[in-house]
Image (tube, rainbow, N blue to C red; front, side, top):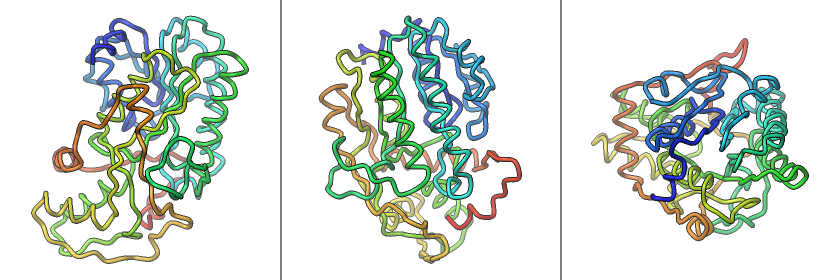
Length: 335
């Protein structure tokens, strides 16, 4: 889109830029010839996802390092905050760490941004999980916020921090609430890579938890494009905007879609130990506001996105960083 050409030669700071969505945001910024600085502690993201992308400088640091954050925001035109602990089951076991990263670090970054008058826009990335299960569908930005996990509570707290500090310190903030994104550069054991990886093992049966929950699915390149538009579109300071496809599938339907693409018939073993304590039943995005304000709508179909994701998993496999000292992967297998 022509409006995104405004980012050419601009200085952009991307926190969490080595992560799943972050690396796609970084790639799209580089394609526009922006000059990108990434801050990432690599607890979730991977340096390999960005090392071949031109115009990128990586600072391996934590957002709680106030001095490095203050230095990083200097002389920047735009800031995108994607840094977060993202995997919901981790939050059951590490609530302090989730609030430290998703709330306190957001305060540090917001304060640093508020002191830099050159910054034209600060886009903070929240999550659709802050809504909890749908009370009506599709879900617009006025849907009640009833978070059902420690992760979701921390994301809601983080976005409210940004909004209130934007009012108190008068810096140009926009909040984006992405619904479930999927695609290459996977960093966490989310449901789509989990299904694909089990199917690649040549088994006739795969084991999953709740197969009836429904999620709105958006290919990661579409999500990233929405985030970039939020940097440059005029007249949206202070707005909160959903980014999602309004195309929801249950996990059972998702298995059917993936098995059809992979041409492999599998049965599903439902393992009740994999059920989350208070799982969200349904998330379906209303993206009317994004369309109206940003001119955004999804471009990649679920089928096309799944084909690209399956091919990426085949070529790259799946491995995950260990975000915490003493962390083990055993409990993750339950979710």
